[in-house]
Each structure stands twice: as C-alpha cells, then as structure tokens.
Image 1: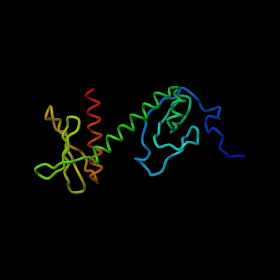
Image 2: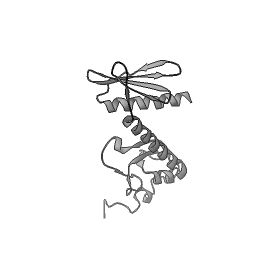
Image 3: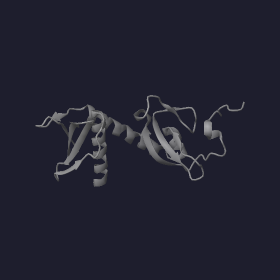
Image 4: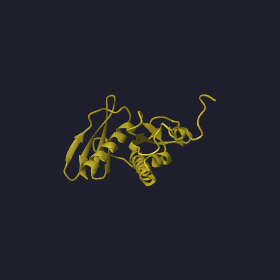
Length: 168
C-alpha cells in the first residue's frame, strides 16, 4: 500500500504539527489558474481560497482551505473572517472593474472611488493611469504600462486599497 493517501492527509501524520500554525497570506487561486486546488493538509477538500500556513517546527508552508486553516491555528473565526474579507475585496474589485466609467474631456477613462479620481489612458503597449486624491489634489502616476485595460483597472484598485490602508 505504498504511496496511498492516508484517510485524513497530513492530519494522520505524526511528524506534521496539528496546531500552532500561523497564516502568512491568503489568495484566490482563480486569479492564477482556472482549476481549484486540493488542500495540502487534509489532502481531500477542493479549495479556491488558499490560506498559506507556516509553522516553526515544519520545514515548508502549506496551502490549505478555510476549515483546515482554522483548525491549524486553533481559531476558526479568524480563518473565516480572513476568507470573508478576501471575498469582499474580490467583490469590490469586480464592481470597480465592471462598473460605470466616464470619460475625461481628452477621451480618457475616469472613475471616482473612495476619495480618488482614477484616470486611465491608452498608450503605446497598453494602459497607464493616474490616481488623484480629491481632498489633497495630490497625483500619483502609474510606473508601469499595463497590457490590458482590465490589468490597469485592477492595478488602480489595488493602489487605492494600499493608500486607504496607509491612511488608517
């Protein structure tokens, strides 16, 4: 029976710590690929939202689902809140990308969000943008050309999220 999966994955392995893990990040796997992954702890559950867990007594990180993450860190509520916060952010991003965009006098795309004006301009090789903080009239220009309009909108959204976090 060599190579067969244990009934409960790594939960059945005595050399794998079962508690005391820390989540070092969470991501939506569908941002990277079309298929779901299998939880590396239980080795059974298909997962979309990946909680990356680390433990000082284990040599590698494990990408796991919400249930296993909560059990590993002994805090189901924290794992659920972390995953819900990611789902909420994804929902906000989708509304930002797909929502109504207007046009500037020069024909560039524009949209207001959370106290910022986003202006996106098509340039050679893709799209560039500028964020204007409406209260301070401070402009932040994109450093990179994004190959698609969707990439430029996503970058603008992420920049606003970072600036909002810094302002807290």
